[in-house]
Image (cartoon, rainbow over all chains, first blue to last red; front, side):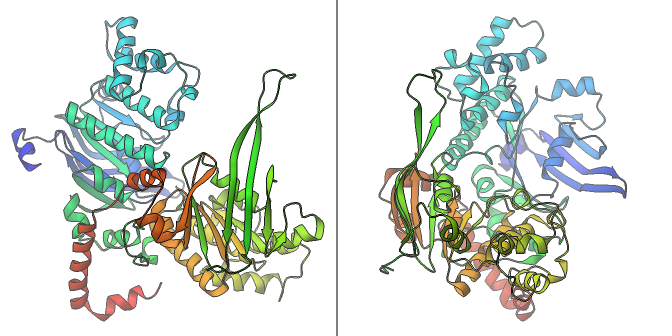
Amino acid sequence: MTDDVNKNSSPLLSVRDLTVSFRTAQGPVRVVRNLDFDVPRGGALGIVGESGSGKSMTSLSIMGLLPKGGTATGSVRFDGTELLGLAEREMRGVRGDRIAMIFQDPLSSLNPYYKVGTQIAEAYLSHRSGVSRKQARSVAIEAMERVHIRDAARRVDHYPHQFSGGMRQRIMIAMALSMEPDLIIADEPTTALDVTVQAQILDLLSEIRQETGAGLILITHDLAVVSEVTDEIVVMREGVAVERGQVEQVFSDPQADYTRRLLDAVPRIDDEIGLMRTTDILIPSERRSVR
Amino acid sequence: MSTPTPLFRGTNLVKEFRTGSSNPLGRAKTFRAVDEVSLEVHRGETLALVGESGSGKSTTARLVARLMDPTHGTLEFEGADVTRAKGADLREFRGAVQVIFQDPYSSLNPKHTVERLVTAPLVYQGRKIPGGARAFTRELMERVGLNPMHSERYASQFSGGQAQRIGIARALAVSPKLVICDEAVSALDVSVQAQVINLLRDLQADEGFGYLFIAHDLAVVRQIATRVAVMSQGAIVETGSRDDIFERPTHEYTTTLLRAVPRINPEWDRRRRQAEASRGASVATAASGDEAGR
């Protein structure tokens, strides 16, 4: 991986001192604090943490999609352009076009009233001027074929409810792919899916990365998923990166106490029984922790 | 293991649902959500029912709890047929079988205090609360690892893991013999999940209940199950001891399911434990005393 980075010295995405805060009646609350990380070109970074760790807010601030009342400070440089403070018009040229995002729940990201092909084409048209609807439609079909939706030429005219959860997630990925993004941010993309479907989607993400050379940020609570998919990992807890490094290094010799305890708590499918240890240190007492 | 009468036995359970037929005069179509399922739960053991969404595992749980009536098949509890039990018999059954659901917040009334939530099953069943509601609640809260001084709080004032403990305390209130956990730890963060699994295991060791543990997460099942039944499309495709299912699966679907589970490289785990052991040796007693706290 280091060799790849050296080929093109500047990373694709470089986040420095990122702090996200929200105004509340009790004063500002900082949900992400002084976060630093890089995504090399073609690299895959995993951001893991439990609920409330700030991992989703990190991705939303990169995309300029923070909810009302939230502000991000620090620096988010994407391919040489500073994204924080970028005018909305210019941000639109980046978001969805050069950085694509895939969310947990594909059903709520798709409009039930429109055919999936129309929605993929619409996304494409909104970013590419001078493209005919006919061209956009063939882009949609091609993108659906690339995510292995069989009979794409016919399925392009189906509505979201006619697809299973895994297929809908494929459509979201197709939509992201049609733009040929440089970076894909996937926020819990497989959390709502069955385990066999999850495996297919994770394979698909890896395949796409190899084919297109796009960078990937995978945000998840699932340490096993991250360990299989990404090269590097950032472990977040309550808005702070407590650990970062190569996946193998973090998993085999974690430096932070929190990472160690988290790894202890993960139930293993291929491990001796009863090794799962727990500790109260992980949960701040009165925080809701249902996902 | 092969006690003469299991705690619970379901035989050839079938649940069919009508699906909308466009023609009112035409024959109603039915969908078979549970297809000839037979299962047994013994005292002190955990039968895990695993499968993907739509496999019929939750419907099976509802049939076992008599929250839904089967289309065919029989349910026996401690040898007695409870398939169509009514009145006093049903009430007795309900006292012996409790369910813990996935989302603690939606299964706990937000307007009720812990005390009211936990004592509700006894109140509904017209039973006396031993020692009075306050003392009874506090004792149960202590048993599930909650601060007994918080008995006047509301569910929303607790974290997800704590709220799930309230759900467990409520299930314990009637001293059940069979506890059905329907994805009871699925929505919890990993650290909290481990705690709740350990609590469920400890309670079983103390009380000897049988668990029917419905889950889609096979790693969790590996940690808690005595036996495993794998469901697919309404039917049990394979059943066996935990080790048989995980180490020597025979059905193709079980193999597919197991292969799909993401896993942390065991070699990394081994190196981590080794590193930790050598670290632990130097830090010695301080850390281990800390860990024994929970």
